[in-house]
Image 1: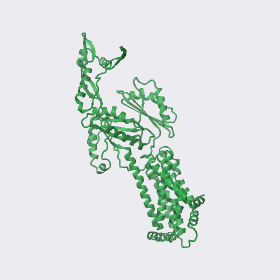
Image 2: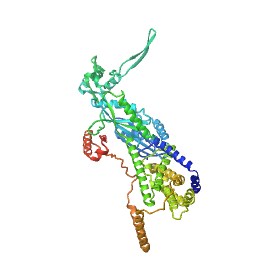
Image 3: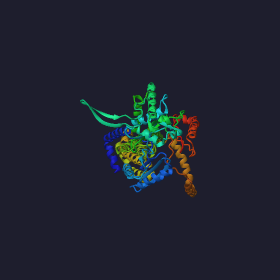
Image 4: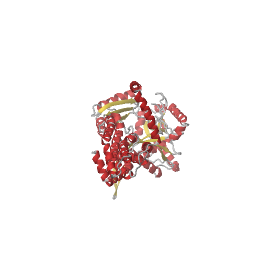
Length: 625
């Protein structure tokens, strides 16, 4: 079959060349639109259930919330592990499903199961977490020199969060840092005792006084009007614009006065107001953590999360375009802006650069080595051409299948494996044509066809050996299969494409470029290597038994070393990023953790490498764990 394909290609050279041009065009289109990930997602379908109940101890969270939810979630189809943790006010349950389970079917099953739980405490609603191990695509901080942390946090939660969620592919935007504005009523126990007021009476009075009540419809002539009672505290709208700070201050004063004028009860037939028993101030909710970045010890940060199985590069680019639109539009208050500092696209571009670098270096090495051994630059160029064409074939197949490329699938491709078939064919053709006893009266196409047909069996078995070597990659399951499966597919597509090109395009190119080739001559390097090799070969043949004993001893020694070798699940990926995490005692206070984090950044920042590779790194969130 290989002989027939080679013969057909040599007699239909124009069709082969047109097919190669079509491959280049399709491959170029696929390269432009192929989704590129930094790394494959090795995690199985994972659904996380988050339940909060502020003020509840870990024991109560486990007993009242964790156990009922675990009981309902157990037994789901495809469920492999169910892990949970209960903290103060928080219960987290992770449902890990078997590989191959449909993620969205598993997610819907979890929703159905938690919907059937009816014995949870009042006001407690379990929710699904949008987090996924590879979901983070953009980190940013919200900057505004003239704004308070309360104002920055309010814009993050009520403006930026909602705007970024409109981007296709984004599932959630989580915010960290800053303070949440809060109107606080500081009660005086002595005054409460004096007027016979309880805490329940105060909370009920504030709640009942902070509501609008709908009325009837009042007809006035030909018009009708809706009647309602306005009861919301501070009905005015806050403004964050520094130019109207006086107006914003007036609104806050109005809200404080509204709270102070709420009637709690009557005492000796006289109304008792909030201002008589308490002081009303503007503060913020108790903080559980602080985010620092560079020289700033307290910033408002946001993390954009991508929906599982979405394409990271288009989603990241859409998020960046949305951030630019928000910054240049009128959505943010004057002087406030979003500054992105950690983008998934940066890592993807590094991955692409590494792949291109490997491609260029691989082609250069192939040309150099072939020129050294063949002494012919044309032959080396024909073989090296199979590298980009084989990769274009693999990328085209991946694009048509809707798969993604990543550093492990493209960056780990061995170019020597891709060009091995082309090397065999070109070397044999070159040897036949340049041999001193070659019949130069015969047509060049016939001689090329004869030379290509000679290596049919060698080409078949050498390719089969390589394919057999990759069988373990194709048989991997679980995390290993998720990580190295794309690499195995890329290898398979690239080898098949290179083999097809070797038996079609390579003989055709030789028929065009191998006219008037001189007799093959050894290069200086080739002669030196052969001389050293022949000398060593003569010594080995004269001491055969000693050579076999040495090789046997080396084999035994190698086998003995195998149990002592270490193992790594993944090779180190030096992409220019470091993730440093400091663990503090579990009982550490927020103030102490906030004091330590800036010190850690000060120690790391002077490093020349940190300045070169990570000039605007983010400090970890600090606080009790």
